[in-house]
Image 1 (cartoon, rainbow, N blue to C red):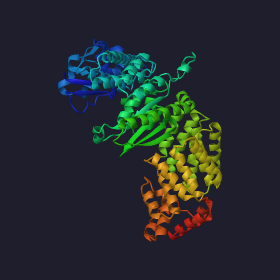
Image 2: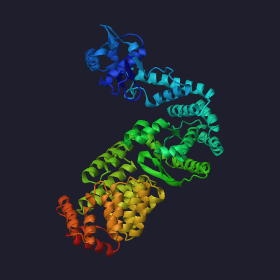
Image 3: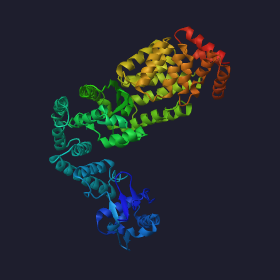
Image 4: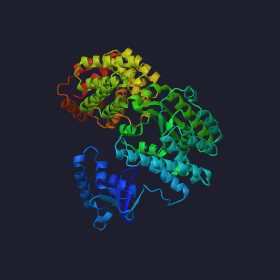
Amino acid sequence: MTYRLITFGAGQLLWQEASEPLRVPDLSIALLAYLYDCKAPVERRELARLLWPHARDAASTNLRSLLRRLTAALPAEGKNLLDVDDRHMSIRREMVVSDIDATATGSPAEELAALAERVTKQFLPAYGKGSERLDLWVRDLRNRMLVALREAFFEATKAQTDSAAQAASRRAAFVLLEQNPEDEDVRATLLIGAKAILPAHSRTRLVVGSHIGSAEQGTGETTNLPPRLALLPPDESGLAVKQQSVSNALIEDLTIDLCTSRAVSVIAPYTSEQIKASRDKVEALRRHHVHFALDTRRSGDYLFVQLIFLPADEVVWAARFALSPDGLLEQRRQIADTIRSVIAQRVEQKSPQTVDFQAGPEAYFAYLRGLQSLSSVSLPAVRKARRHFREALDHQSGFALGLAGVARTLSLEWVLTARGDTELLMEAERLARTAVDRDEQCSGALKELGVSQLYMGKIDESLDALQRAEAVSPHYADALCSYADSLNHGSRPAEAYEKIMAAIDLNPLSPDTYLWTAAGASYFLGEHERALSLIERMRDPNPASRLAAACWGMLGNAAKARACRLKVMRDNPHFDVEKWLAMIPHKESWQTELYREGLLKAGF
């Protein structure tokens, strides 16, 4: 063996087990994989048409160019990887080992786990979506690998002798059900195995759960595939693992349990790990079509859990569970029962939006890109987000979240420009009302209605809208943040601070707006140093420079107050204290006077 050809996941060609892959053209990986799979010489004309089906006149030229680039990238000792003549081409199989082969190199459990990993990583993931010959071949090989995994799964379940074999069988079952949620033979086999693994309470719930949705299926009507759920395990330290982590065992229990249910399609653990590590949530959602994610984090003796409806980036439920060394099994039971019942309830509540997402995901993807753009509070970011939200409306004109998103950017622009442009707020309120009319249960729309009404001075109406948003989604951290802001302007800063702390607790990696809101409440509570520490935690503290200047002014630090004032005047040379204070709504005049005092002490 000279070369190692990797085709599952990131396609790579390695030389003599080198740590770095050779820099060969991407398309050459597909070429080598095809030749390896064919096991016999292939006509060059056939290969050219396979790789360039829409460029037949140039296909042969393209193939010659690809071969030159591939050969140039190979080491001098291995230039003879391909056997090429005027008409045919083949790969020297004696020089290559590839993950296409499912050869036995370890125990049955290790081989089953390796097969499951290959199916999850996917063969040549960049291909297989179209109807050309190359795509058909890619899908055929993926199916062959899936059949091999299924056969190996049933063979392994006949002779499970240790925990490693049981774990490999469970993982294989998760992957098979992820690929085909309707595979009742795999589901039944997993259920039988789970009875020997899970505590008695879970076995009972498994039997009940396995019949969820059967009434609908028995009507003979065509139903949509169940929503896809990813269970994301916490990042556990080595010590936690040694102490038989409750949280990891809990995720294992829930994954087995929910895999036997027809209410949801559970993503395999391998895929969940990829989503957990992904930096691009939109791409992860697009690639894996996940509707719900159960995110878990462990902090000390507590397990924090939140269920996220990913198409709307909305936390629909969250809880914190205390963990103690005593009674671990009982804790596991209580936590698992709670999470299981909540998942069933919330999935049912979100089913209309889930169907909507399945029918037209492009609007949701554009909406999420808009949310990503708002990770920083700046005018360019706000206007970029507005473009994405309008793109969402282009895909789906009545999309409530898209309407609410545009309204949000208009309200933010009003704050950032500080020009008192009432047309921005009027349009924001109109769009938010339209969104609420479209979907009365859209907490995001209710939130934006409350925000626009706040800046228009309709404080009581704003508080009413935000209270409704909290009632619809009590764990929607963004809505709680806006509610806190309205409470602050409603001259209730103590309640505002309590509410924003609840939002930060639900969303620990908080956007800058959360910290800004908490700093505002702190200022009116006389906690100027706390307000400044919150502003300093912002990724971009510049938008809060007015508030920081007022804090330094109240603390008597003229130098730092002046520095903050200069930032404000640099970004907005026409800023006028009295005009700004006239724009900012406060229910009671003492707040306006307190803010004026701080700004004047800062030198404005």
